[in-house]
Image (spheres, helix red, strand yellow):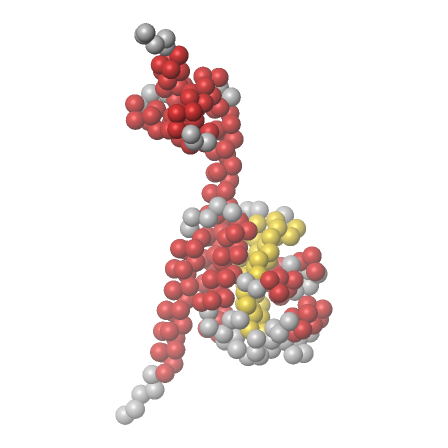
Length: 246
């Protein structure tokens, strides 16, 4: 008896492709702190990794207003930019909180102006999947095909997995960005302490390093000695201020 195993093989390859995409996205975004840079990495990795997807874009909203856009190919950036009009697959996905599929844009009635621009740019099919990032930012990832009916149920599954994973990664990027901002504000506050500022200045002079690095040196010393930062600074300032014996 002959068994047709082609369908399970195709499904297995699809799962492996999706897993490889998620691993690559994690590696590419795990250390980023800039949201726009992360969006660009996301759409480029997706374009290169998903068979049948010629272009990829991302549309982001903050408090209902455009908050960012990224396109794997600059020529198609306008398709993801809501400033060119809110009537688009991305906005449908965001508003309806569900995946949107237009496998063949020929005769697509839902977004006439957007569809005309997309077809002029060579786009023939699109999947838009909503992406929840955090309490302030939401978005949609948009997968574009250059021929009709290329986007299959497997692409829809990939888009669903991608949207979930991308939301987590982008939320982490925004959190790291906030933490860096807070750390910078704390550093500025610490440097306003006269003796700490003096100690930082000493380290900068000795090492030829910027203020942030000098403050890190001071903090490392405080942690190693298990004493407050200000006390380390006072000791250093006293040491360098002590008259040298002739």
